[in-house]
Structures are given as C-alpha cells and as structure tokens.
Amino acid sequence: MKKIIFLSAMLLTSFYAKAQSGKLVEDKLFKVNALAPGISYELGVADKTTLNLEAFLGLALNGGSDRSTNFGLYPGLEADVRQYVNFNRRLNKGKNISGNSGNYVAFLNQLQLGKPIIGNLEYASDYFYNGALVYGIQRTYKKGFYWGLAFGPGIFVDDFYTDAGILIDLRLGWVVSGRKK
Image (cartoon, rainbow, N blue to C red; front, side, top):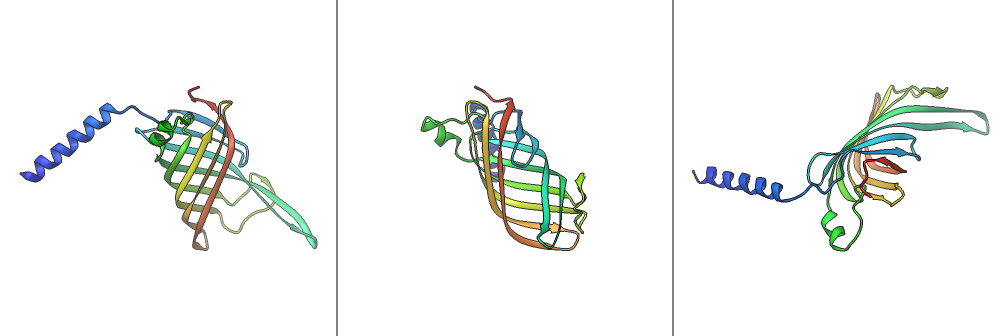
C-alpha cells in the first residue's frame, strides 16, 4: 500500500510540475546545413527535449600523385533525441535560448549509404552506421546563423567491421523557419 501511495504521489507531483512549467525548447525548427549539405528539422517533444531529424550529403575524395582522383556524394540520414541541460542557467544569466541555443546530451544515430548518388567512388560496404552518446553545443544568432558541435563515444558499423571510437559531428548553417525572434 505504501508503494502505491508513493507512486501516486510521484506521478501527481511530476504531472503538477509539468503543468507548471512551460516548454522551453522551440518547436518545429527547419535548418539548412552548409558544412555537410543538408536539411534538418528539430521538433520539440517535451519541456527541454527535442527530436532532431536530418538528411545530408557526405563527400568523399580518394586520389594521389600516382593514381586518378575519384569522388562521391553519399546520401545520409541522422536522428537524435536531445535533452537540453542548461536552459535555466542561460536564462538566469540573461543569455539567449532562441533557436534552441544550449548544451545537450543525446543519442545520435547516423546512417550513410555506400553507393554515391553523384561520382564514381564506391565503397566496398553498402552502408555505414554510427551510434554515439554525445554531449552537444548548439548556438543560434539573431540573423538565423547557427553552429553545432557534438562529440562522444560511439560505435561504427558497416558490412565488414564493428569498431568503437569517438564521434565528432560539426554543423554550420541557418535556421530558416520556426525560430522565435
């Protein structure tokens, strides 16, 4: 009986706290990425949590002084659930959280195909998957320019190998719509 009362109190407390707090993340941010050409959509799903979906093109070059240079543009998809961890501190210091400017932790998933949509450089593997637990930093400025950096331990998988390492993900671009001024 004590467990039921305790769980009920916890549930009511969390519901009350959720009702009292406003959603701090911005909803429906549409971004264009310049560094890894692509588009992304960040959807607010909770008070400080977003779902970020991205489609991008990866570039690979292979060549040297004794062989011809080959290149390829490879389609890729990324999805991550972000939990922003410093919005309250930024607000208390009078800093901007517009465009979801803040630091976050996330589980980042990337999938890239091994056959190019443009170019002649084909990988032996049909796909590349990266999954990582990352700490990220995202900043958005008044004109919509944004940058993001995420890094952390991850796994790297293709048709032949599974390795562990550090994933580093860098983004530069513009928030096209959805940002509060």
